Structure formats: C-alpha cells, structure tokens
Image (cartoon, rainbow, N blue to C red; front, side, top):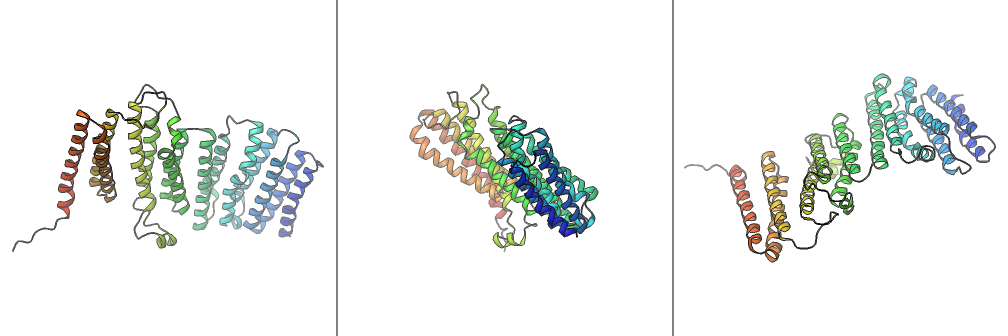
Length: 422
C-alpha cells in the first residue's frame, strides 16, 4: 500500500518532467503536478516512518525541477515559478518537524532536510538571476541559510528524541546554514569583505564546535581558515583592492588583516584544550598524542597575518605611486624600518610566548630573529650606508640583548636544577 503509493509517485515525477519537455502541458501544470506527487510520496513516507522514501522523493523532485529549469529555453521565468521552488525547499526542510515520531527520530530525515537547500541552489540561482537580477544574488543563499537555521531552531519544539539523532539534526542543519553563509559572502561582497566574512564565519563555527562536538564543524573551520590565510598572505591581488589613500596606518589594510587575525586568535581560544580531548579514533591514529592541529594552525595563521600586515603597512608608508606594490628597489629608510619592525615583532612574540609558556611562540620568535639577523648582515650591511647601517646594527644588537636576557631570566633559570650543597 504505502510503499506502492510512494513508488508510483516518485516514478511519476520525472515522467511529468518529460511530458513538459514536449510542451504537452503548461508550466504551471508541471509545477502543480510534481508538487502534488511529492506530497503524496511524503505522506507515504510519514506513514511508514521511512527516511529512505523521504530522501528519494527529495532527490527526484529536486532533480526534475533542476533539469526543467536548466534546459528551458522557450521563455523567461516568472516570480510564481521562483515561489514554487521556494515552497519545495520549505516543504522538504521542515517536513521532519511536522512528521510523526517514527520518521522524526530517524537521522537521515534531518540529513535530507539539511541537503535540500544545496540540491535546489543552482536551480534557484538560475531562476533568481532571470527574475530578480544579479544585484541582490547574495540574498538567495542567505535566505536558504535562514531556512536551515529555522529548521534547526524548530528542533527545540519538535525534534528527534534520541540523543544521537538530535545531534545529527543540529550539526547537519547548522553546517548547511554555514555553507550558505560561506556562499553568500562571495556572491554579494568582494575584495577584503569576502576575507573578513569568511574569517568571522570560521570563528562562529569554532564556537559552535565547542557546543556541538562534531568533527565536520572543526574541519570546516580549518578549510575557511586556510582560505582566509591564503587570501591574505599568498594573494597578490590584495594589493590592488584600493588605491593608496592619505592615511598610512589606519586604512583598509588595518581592518583587512587585523580583523581576521583576531578571528584566528578566537578560533585558537575556542579549540584549545578541547581539541585534543575530542579527537576521534581515526584522528588519533594519524596524529601524535595530545596534538591540537587546528588550534595550532589558527595561532600560526594569526602570527603570519599580523607579520604580513606589518610589512605591507611599511611598504605603503614609503610608497610613492597610486597603487600599493611590493617594492624591489632599494630605499634605505624603508629597509631599516623593516629590520627594526621584524626585531620588535620577534621580541613581542618572545614576550607573549613566555607569558603563555608557549614553546611554539618562542620558536617562532627565534626563527624571526634569525631571519632579521640574516637580513641585516646579508642585505642591510651591503646596501645601507652611514647612519642607516649603524641604526640597523644597533637595532639588531638591542633586540639580541633583550632576547638573551629574557631567555636567561625566564627560560634557562626555570630549567636549571637546584644545586645540592654537600
């Protein structure tokens, strides 16, 4: 009975799609018939408590609607067609909420609800661009994110009772919403706002991971963080975002780099301590015991992003053209400022490492001071002259003295064993 009805409805949906391709029925009849058949299959799935029929119905309906939209060339789309596609997304996203307990308690019902938005995204985008235009295209994934958030919020009222199914529902719907926000940022924004938006989203996902222990959230945070770091550190196009303005420090470079750096620090804070405790078994086989990879990478990214900002700010200060660029010429004042800034940053990292008792920060400080020393001896001494050469050497000497005193005072003394008096 119910299985036969569901099978008949699911098979009839693509058949209606083939009929409308032959122009045998009007477009409104295609939408009405496919939606009616989908509802019939969903009712059968609800009666049987079958998440399989729910997932199959969603896949077939979304595929049929997508093929019709992407293959249609006979005329423009209408706002009514866009509305029907939106209703289809709402139907499948919230059906587990209104379904009987037998279906509501099945994890795959909620996985289907989370995946229906991505399944309809390209179809909705195609129609949205034709009906509304590209000016507000970022609103589309934002609205799909709202649908996923609404379905996740409704779990508080009519969610699955088993703890594992409830966790699956929350995580999958939250991840779906996060994915749509990730898409909405480049759809609507450009240049540095994409980077800032992704950095803020990575921080939000890390905070969500603290509440919902799911590996997918952690590695989605990692993926976004890597994208942000690459866009800031290894992206030559960042130099051409804007022309150089009158302000030399408090300009677009400051918020473009320091806001993501603060987000990386926030990710490190959200994951530290907990990440090593929540490692899955497959992670434990790949990683050394007690290693927190994502939090360590977040801290490293913060250090690199701040270092990149320091260098670009100095380049901008001494630049003369309208566009920011990485100089290849020799300018004594700029080269001296770079050496001093590197040394100061190395001392700051050392101080932070000693305060936090962090070996990684102390190692980063040591590597940076070695790089500064190499720059001074191999470059500055060869190309700087007069007071610039003296200042470069003096700055390096002062930094080395401060670092050596700090190591002697805080590192070596604490590691020295107390002497035994005989």
